[in-house]
Structure formats: structure tokens, C-alpha cells
Length: 197
Image 1 (cartoon, rainbow, N blue to C red):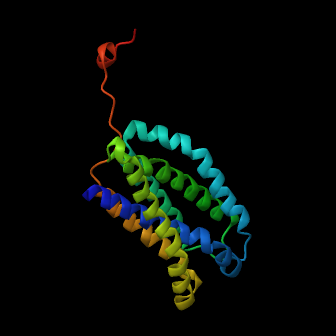
Image 2: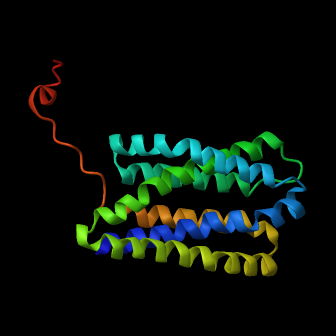
Image 3: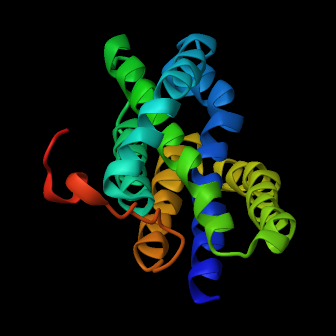
């Protein structure tokens, strides 16, 4: 139960960070960076699509938790770089940042849902799916309002620090999760001895 609560909290936290950027970046890019925002968000989505399958493969080798923590680290790095972007920043830097964010998002998402349902018995999959989507959708609904309020009160440049802080908090809660990881398959016969047929 402790791991379930921690992973649901992690899900909410990284959605708070990521969705704040995706929902407010159009305003931020136009007013602060004076750049086109459509291309950068499209690049993030394209990078995520390309990364979904490799992220699952990596998780099968090193475990879901480690893969998610790597994804959170990449997402934090992208948002941390975003804190220092200005109108004079080179376009390639913003492009690289959003590609990294897309890969990170895929790495996190393709592995987080399986971790949640791994914690339940077969008859409870629907209930645990509900837990997952409640955490995700609640955060997606709340973060545009909260980030928008802070941007109104403190200025638009608070967007990326806001996102980076929530993603960093998600790393802490995810680090404490102890269950729901992929179970390694036991090797049998000659495979256990690393002997080929």
C-alpha cells in the first residue's frame, strides 16, 4: 500500500510538471522567447513516439523503477535548461531540450502504468487502473490553474522552475517505491549456464 501511494503521488507530481509546460508553453514561447511553439511541442511528441518501444525494452533489462528514474532525471534536465532559455538562446538548444523531454516522458509513461497494475491481483486491475488515471487526470486538471496563478503573480518565467521542482519531487517519491517492478524471468536449463544450444 505504501508503494502504491508513493507511485500515485509520483504520477501526480510528474504530471504537474509536464502538463504545466505543455499547457502554458504557447503563452510562454510567444511572450518570453518570441519563438514558434508549435514545432517544439511537435518534436517532443515525435520523440516520445519513437522512444516508447526502446523504453519498454530498457525496462525489461534493468527494471521499470530504474528506467522511470532515468526518465525523471532527463525530464528534470530538460526543464532545468528551460529555466535559462531566453529570446536570444539558439534554436537548436530549445529543440534539443524538447526532444529530451519527449524521450523522458515516454520513458516514464510506458513504465508507470504497468508498475501500478503489477501491485494488484487480476481481479483488481480495473480498480488499480482507476487509481492511476485518477492521479494523472487530477494533476492534469489542477496544474494549468496552479501554474497559471503563479505565472500571473510572479511572472511568466516561473514556468520552468515550477515544472522542474515538481519533477524533482517525483524523483524523491519514486525513489522510495519498493514494489511493482518487472519480475526477472528465471533462466532454465542451458540458458541458466549461459550455454548456447
